[in-house]
Length: 130
Image (tube, rainbow, N blue to C red; front, side, top):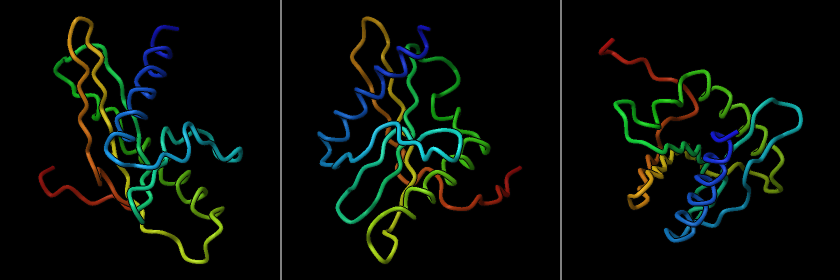
C-alpha cells in the first residue's frame, strides 16, 4: 500500500537527518518479539539513548503529523523502550529520551523535518488546561 511506502521513505529520510545531526542510529524498526509494535528508530546522542517515533506526511494539512502519537501509541512505545533497555549489556540503564520526528515529503517541495526532542516521558503528565 502507498501509505506503507510513504512511511518507509520517511524513515529513510529520518535516518539520514539524524545522522547529519550527529546521532548514532543503532536500530531501525526494532521489535521485541514479545510485545506488539516496533520502535521506528533508536539512536544515541552522546550518552543519551533516544527512541524516535517517525511520522511521515505527503501534505501539510490542518493536523500536524506528530499529533498521531496519541496516549495509546506513547504507552506502546514506552513498553517497547523498557524491553529494549532491559536487554542492554550495561549494569545501569542509560538516560532516555522520547522524540517525535515529523517528516514532510510534499511533492514539488523541499523535504521538511520537525524534530520534537523530549516530546513525552516515561509517564503521562496531566494537562491542567483540559
